[in-house]
Length: 183
Image 1 (cartoon, rainbow, N blue to C red):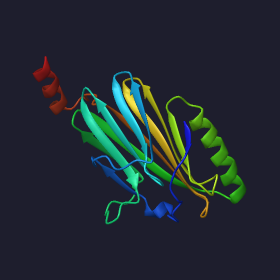
Image 2: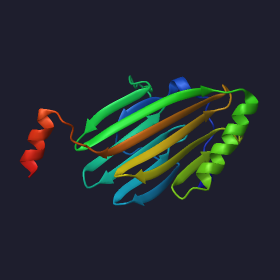
Image 3: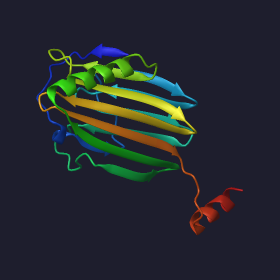
């Protein structure tokens, strides 16, 4: 789904983005509700940022990547955390592109996301290359989503990827004890 965001484009930068896990829902400019094999997912565009709300039998989780005033948690390159019964993995990278490459990449991503049944993209008025886009899927018992935040004035594209899935026991003694307690 492709939408024009009903807000003005503020001159933010990739370096202004912060990451947060577990925040309450923030006001959204656009949202897409999905059900992916029992997982309820809401993709939310917050302007130059995103929020994903996930509910599944193992619990709930929210991820926010936004320009959060007063936040002390900058956008990390990677995070791996246990959230209840889930394993949560997040990764981010910033691509710096020439103006011509940026325009081509922007068109490619907007076409991919807007044509996908689990995709949501919002374009800011005044610049066809200023956008936030999100794409979700369910694969092998895990929910995955990717996002792209475009900053054409700097030629920067922030790409994130997240994976959330039920914790898979390893061979450590704590996991064996946990498995034994459940059987």
